[in-house]
Length: 405
Image (cartoon, rainbow, N blue to C red; front, side, top):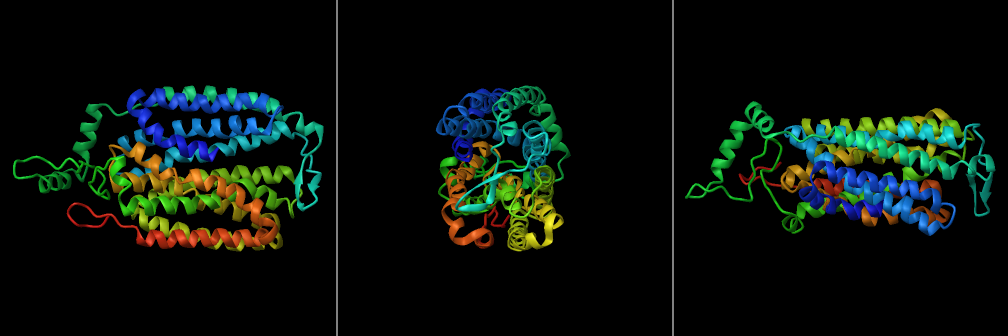
């Protein structure tokens, strides 16, 4: 799924220029929903075909539909890109608050406990009760149809600001005078403005306007790419396995579903919080704080078996709250560092790091858990976060005037 999303996000920016905001978003949404609906058939036939429908196809649709609302929101709030991105991706992260409960209530309405484990992993619990398993295929039909209807409604509510609205935004912007000065400084002797410089309403922006072929030649792009790669490994691991970790000392499926639901609230709220933090200070300040706090919580969650349900609930909530910031900070950093005109494709290129981090994040527990155990895996994830901190310290983009953003 993550590979599909990472592969299609740069393509989404291209589709946005060809098909427009609504068609691109609806196309992506309905590809995702089609993958969910088809999984009703594939889950009953082949795991590998299921990996295509519920995995790659689902992710590809997400990748196509993900970028256009971000680009649209930044046009409406050009000076508050962090806030705009935070609210859009909060919806993406917060959906699990509803659907974790819907899925559990439908598939396991009687709160049956998982009752089998594999010989090599006695702490990991699985279901084999027909009362639970028989509900799984039809859940794909219910969810796929629900998603498709919600996506259509969402697309009908999408609007880009018209020229009159943009002029009003420009006129009321406190940075408009600063922008006129910036553009004047970049005029050549004939009065022409350097085409690599954009008029931006974001006072924290670089003023640059770089194409995808240009950003891949910059040091700043590769620092963002590798930081996103490292920061993605923790969310992939925790999202997939927090429930399996909880089952090692908690035998309550409803409680674990509740943890997932409230963690989705943390996931959504965190995206807004970190976006606001980037607007108040900078991407760099916010990301350094994110990496630091994630390292602390991912290391100390090792004590959760001793703290029981309350500690597990709080720590999982906070980990989701913290790592969610990456999804509002990186599009904000991309727009500010390289400009807004090509931000759809440019952010897709930054996000392409997930093409690699997805498989690695999924395979790491399989390959290393027997050797490292849960505590070793948490320690490894904290190490990735420390490297992300170091890379963020090295991140630097200069305005044409020589100032750092």
